[in-house]
Length: 379
Image (cartoon, rainbow, N blue to C red):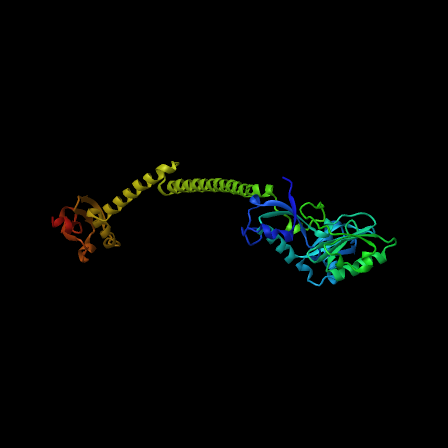
C-alpha cells in the first residue's frame, strides 16, 4: 500500500492514545504515512565540501556548523541533502528533541512515519518565480528547487523583498493567502494573489530531503516481521555451541576415566603382583587380597603364633638352640638346648602362662618351654 500524506500538525485528529512514548505502538498495526513538518523548526545551511573522504562527512558536518548553531551540536540532527550550484554541501539541521517529539506525535496517532519533509516543499516550483503560501499564521516561501524558508509574516515579507532585490532578473511573485490585507502594498502591486490553501494530503511530497535518517530511520514492516530471525539464529548458535561443549566435555571425561582405569590397573599390579587385569575386576581382586591380609594379620596376633612372636624378644642373645617346636591352637611347646639363661629370666609374657621343665635325656641345660594361652586355658 502506498503511504498517505499529511502534515504533522494535522495528526491531532488521529490521536488514539494507543501509546505515549517512542516505540510503544506496534508498527504492524500503524498506518504508513509521509509527513510534512514545520519548516521554521529546521535550519538550512551551506558549507564548503570537506577535503576528507565522503564517508566521514557526516561526522565532520556538526563541527563545521558549530559556530552557526545556537544549540550544542550534540543535541542536533544533521542531514546532507546534496550540493548547491556553487558546489557547496546543503545541510538541514533540526533539534533531536523536535525529531523525538514529531515521532512521538506520529506514533500516538497510530501512524508509522516513512518520511518527514520540510513543509515549504509543498509549494509549487517554477523557474523565475517565488511562491508564497500560508499555514496557520506562518508564511511559507519557496524560491528554488531546494531553497525556501518559513517565518512570521513581518519577517517573511522582509526576506521576500531581499530575494527580489538580490535577483539579477526580477522574479515573478505568486502569493496564496486567505487575507490579502496581510500582504504589504508594494508586493500586492507586483504579485499574483489568490486565497487557495495548501491541501497537505494531496500535495506531492518529494523523496528527499527526508529527515528520518540515521538514528531516526523508520522501522519497516519487513524488519518488524523478521526481527525474530536474529534471535532465532542466536538461539540455534547457542544450542550448537552447547552441544559442541558437551561433546568436548564428554570426550575429556572419557579420557580422564581411561587414565584413572590405567592408574588403577597399574597400581593393583604393583601392589598385589597380579599382572594385567581389567579395571572392572580390580576392585574385587583388591577386596579379596585385603580380606586375606586382614585374616593373616589376625592369625599372627592370636594363638601359638602370637606366643612365638612374644618369645622373640626373650630369646634374643640367650645363646640357646631351638631343637623342636610343637604347636596347636592354644599351646606352644619348645625343646631348647643351652637354655640356662632362660631359666634365670622372669618369663612374663602377657596373655600366656609359661612353664619351664628340664629335658634330662638331652643334658642338664636342655629344657622344655611351654606357653599356654590364657584365653584358651579358660575355655
